[in-house]
Figure 1 (cartoon, rainbow, N blue to C red):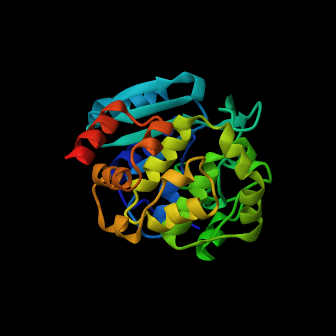
Figure 2 (cartoon, rainbow, N blue to C red):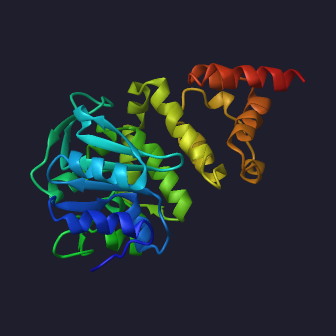
Amino acid sequence: MKIIPLNDINLIEDIRKTKKYKAYLVGGCVRDWYLKKKCFDIDITFKDYPIEIAKFLSEKFSFKYQEFKDFLTIRLISENRRIDLATFRKEKYPYPASLPIIEVASSIEEDLKRRDFTVNSIAISLNDDTYMTVDPFGGIDDITNKKIRVLHQKSFIDDPTRIFRAIRFSKRFGWEIEKNTMDLIERDKKYIKELSKERIRNEIIKILQEDKCYEMLLMIKDLKLLDKNEFFDFDKEIDEIKDLDKRYLYIAQKNGIDFFEYYNFERKIKNEFKKQIKS
């Protein structure tokens, strides 16, 4: 099957035409393009470390670039865009909820194997078989059948933030978390306590940035995923609030700022809450 990119085609074609690197589009952009949605969060993975491509794209499209060599990644940054260029990677988790140790993978299939869900484990080739998909784990079938499915039984032990992502994707797209994956969430949600407060905060922020976040927050609360459930009250009206700072303030007004203190939100945000709540 072919999936044709729906945006940034000039940039993608420039990469494809170099033929110097074996390259694939991967992750959420592939999923969204299959759903006929544009996606500006683009990830491209290469067999070899793509520093020359990063320099070329930076010059042509006015990006700055930043290397994260420990993660085998280069990030292209403009005023309102971010594109990640990575090398084929595999991951090892020394203990539950740890940050991974990154190593070079030998193939695109090995790289896809490390990802969170089958629907995000599809690649689009930028090689001679242009725009043909690589789908070793049945991700296209799961998109078609509207299922969220992990790739292996230790997925949430390795990275408990994937529990928040499963909820986010499920509610965003109206898809079902399939039974085995839901059973694993129930079994492994205890490992969320092993995450730093900052990593949990970042997942909450991503959910609050969604257009409709009420059902996501409700599922988090029903599953008792957070230590501070008692300081996490909200109603459906939160979906009518579209500004992120106003959503923060809404939660602070209903609960006080204990929730934001506990999860180490930025001091300037908490100070603004104090002013607003008093006024």
